[in-house]
Image 1 (cartoon, rainbow, N blue to C red):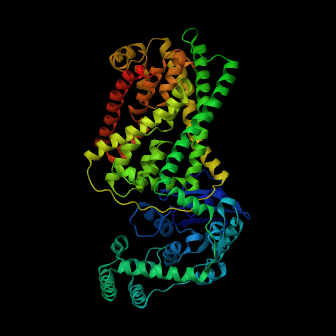
Image 2 (spheres, helix red, strand yellow):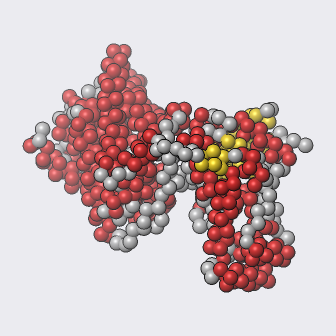
Length: 636
């Protein structure tokens, strides 16, 4: 009997297009990234097809089931313990042999499967053509070719998936070398009754590989037998049994791939020539600087243009200057309207263009090239090029950026990267730069603050490296082919990021702006500002009310701008000099990670490291801000 609802797991290596397929099928808002380790936890969604409900799980992109990483544990536990009706194994058509290594491990688990050969268009550009029938015959399961970014082949993939679920189509048993296969069979005969979902063949192979989790499940006599059989394999091959089985899988992957694909003669494509330029020992550095610089310049130029238009439109309907006298109702209404204007004139003109371009850089493959080229620079602060990925993510939000440091190999590198991220201009800090400097000084000073921030990250990174000496691991990062990303994927990713910001920022802007005006009108904020005057007025040369702004900004950096709009109105340039705007923005950028960033730092690294990072931010902000305040009169 056909089930009315089936569960499908998408499994495969990183960057083969699983998340693109997931989004195309479910319309989910899952973010798609073009680097390994992006999807740490599974994403899930639903769709209706041929009158049936399909529950789809997008498992993390992994390369094996070795239980060496959290991603691998999540994936194998889901397949074994939650028993999806079908596992759709997504492969990159242009690197079939490499991807089949993971396919063979799925086959060992004896689960219903469908093979999805994705990105066949990219493979054809390289002269690679895959024969679906030959691959089906070799593996024993349905094979479907797709171009996920264009939606090609996805209907056929769903049809084959339902068929595999209904008929419980499982792959052939693919045998390894004689001595390995002999050990597997002997272990299978002596295995006890296994929990539901565990394949006897898979468990036997894991015992030969000395998998710690599976070994602990076995009685002593089975452990002893596995140890003896593994020792026999090691004596024959003169290497660890784990390596022997790995070599067997690679050899079989080569045989299967060679029999199922053809390589035709091709000329060097434009994508390959562009790739050579982007990774050139000289031109690559220029292109990397242009990519990052272009991202910022695009955001500022486009943002300033649209922000001027929106400000003029809202100013036509109602003045947005703050109101500190009159009825409480009128003060609240005035503050709420100012919050709406502040939010719209920042999110629409600045944030959306920034996220659009960042999504393009991620999904086109440019980001991995920039990371590769920046490896030498990043090593100066004890990191390698892969750390640039979470660092650039920090330009969006520090919280997921710090979480993504898990792609780095050691705890030391993770801590150094998190320290650097705490200084990076996240979206909240970017709003501060755009809403103050770009609008009320000029675009070039805004870019200059970004450049200064990069210099500060480098200098502080050098200090951190002195405090945490050690060896930096080598850069090992898969670099996938350059491609033109789907606008639909970019738009969905941009909307996901922008939506989360809108849901957070707008209520806070509206409520916070009104609340601050009420508090100011009743004189609640004045004593706090006066208490902080020696720092704000004496050292930083800011107005006396800057103290309350810095307190607000400790919660979220946007609150500095929010409070300023509430206190002096949207025409900030009339209330503060250009020098004061620059100093306030610089201090606001550096002086304190927001509360959510502090929370994730504490979760990942403990309160001791979090305290050190926070004090480093605060100390550098006060020192550099005061020096900046004394230098600017000679520049402006």
